[in-house]
View 1 (cartoon, helix red, strand yellow):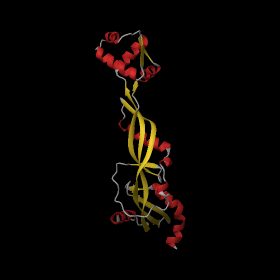
View 2: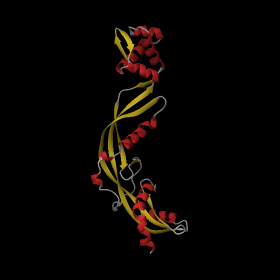
View 3: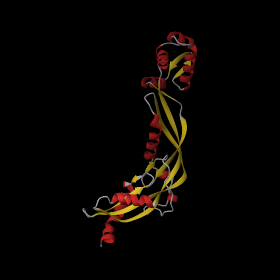
View 4: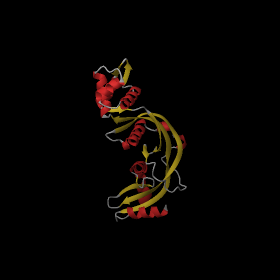
Length: 250
């Protein structure tokens, strides 16, 4: 931590106009949560399925072998697809095969809607940022640090504090990573969000005086993101900067 602090201070003072007046280290809390949710997968409808749907839509088809003969394909393929389409609610059989409203809708879009699936994902949320962090990143070296002075009591934090829009957006980006033209997966419903762990993320805060512009400001290094954290900097600058001139320069 001390080695990192020295490197950052050197970087900040590369400009002769910038002088580091003070530094401190502290940690803010991020929460690991387990999210259960349902997804729906859409796949591009193959040519045979489209032809079968159009056939039962336009013609009076009573048996699977009639459809197989009409389309010139093996009866086994037709029977399998009819079973799949019937299970998905695309066709029904009442003496003759007929297409349903759902079948017409999916035939029009050319996408087959599969059964709903339940999935789970572990996410890492920072209440201070009101956003999710990269849960796959290795955790920074944990040190015994004071909590960030503008952080609310982490024990009072609840999963209900997560913005619904933020959660939906995070899950959507998660499931859409592998989407293609042929296959699209979307989040249907969030079922449950559970807290599983708290993580302390160390930060290094510097108070800086730009002597050329005579401006005081904070820079804060987020060790988890491995970059300067504008959200935390703005929070500190807004609440404290006005008092620094008297503290440091008089």
